[in-house]
Amino acid sequence: MFRHLFLLIWKRKSRNLMLSLEILIAFVVVFAIAGFAVRSAELYRLPTGFSIDNVWSVRIKNIERGDSAFAPDVAENFKRSLAAVPGVEKVAFASTTPYLSRTWRSNFADPVSKRDVLAEMIELDDDALPLLSVTPLQGRLFEQSDNGAPTDAAIINRRMAQAMFGTAPALGKIVEHQLGVGGRVQKLRVVGIVDDYRNKGEFAQPVNIIIARVTPGHSDGEMESLLVKVSPGTTRAFEETLSRQLKLINNNWSYEIAPLSVRRADAMKSQITPLIVLSIIAAFLLLMVAFGLFGVLWQNTTLRIPELGLRRAIGASAGTIYRQIIAEQMLLSTGAMLIGLLLLAQLPITGVLGENLNWQVFAASAALSMAVIYLLSLLCSVYPGWRASRLSPTEALHYE
Image 1 (cartoon, rainbow, N blue to C red):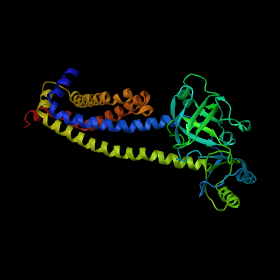
Image 2 (spheres, rainbow, N blue to C red):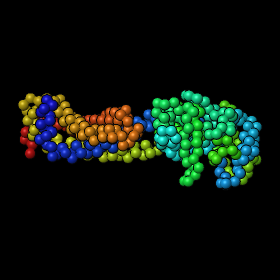
Image 3 (cartoon, rainbow, N blue to C red):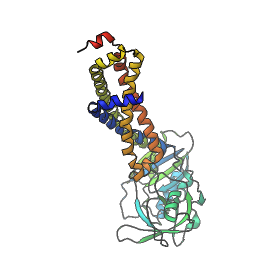
Image 4 (tube, one colour):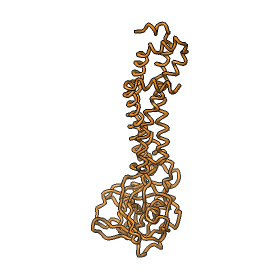
């Protein structure tokens, strides 16, 4: 049977070529959308490495560079004054808080092996990681005992440890990087390793992370954010109380206050929006492909009325004709998708898209895309197949 169907398809190869090309393009577009969705779902299931329960973010604005904005006494006054507010449990300084888009990337080197690794750097004080419920896989978090050490303490994620030191132990090792063009070389000593710390949230790509210890007023870091742990059940009305207290501390600065749960919702919305837009575009494209496919199948069925009528006349049942039309379309779709898979398989083989298109994502995206195209082909061939199966042999043999 399949040999007969292949011969029929090959006989009309010039007519089927454009149809196959249309299916191929639709398959590639659906694959791209499916790949984006599958990778997003894969990222969403990965741990972020921190907890945002009952944590608020305060972003400080209008800080003039080069002044003594965060001298030790000023920083201590911030913490002491905010901790005195009813409902506040803990306060910490940070260069950036989770779900903010601010990124600081730099090349870090192992002075022993000279291996160079690109990583994102975040600066936090001693209270920030416990406030976010971060627990180390190895080593420890920042402590007061790190004060006065010859090198600043740092915590790295497991990905960074593997990239920089391979299978060798990372605890106690030194990493260094240059502070700006022509700036001094900062040395950091690894005191702890965490599983991961995806600062931009659930849909962020896992990257190499270095968390540097910073003491406001004593370090070079720019502390522009505060993390505030509040009591469970605190409502958004607390924002006014917190804003009033911050203005009492320093009225010359402006403050952007929000629970991290709100920042998370905003970040997820902005990250999902491209997927929604692409899905709408893909839906319109598939609709156009469906109309074109339906029209071509209708025309092909009309042109084959004498052939189908002859088959009915020599004993073929209506069901046989119906299944033939659908099977031909499924075989045509299969051929187009196999070509598409051969082309798309070059992406994970070459690694051009990195982890965004690993083999797991490729397999899931291919399965979803093939299911969509098969369903589309089935829906478009049902009526032309039914129409062909209803032909009267007598009328078909007299058709001109």
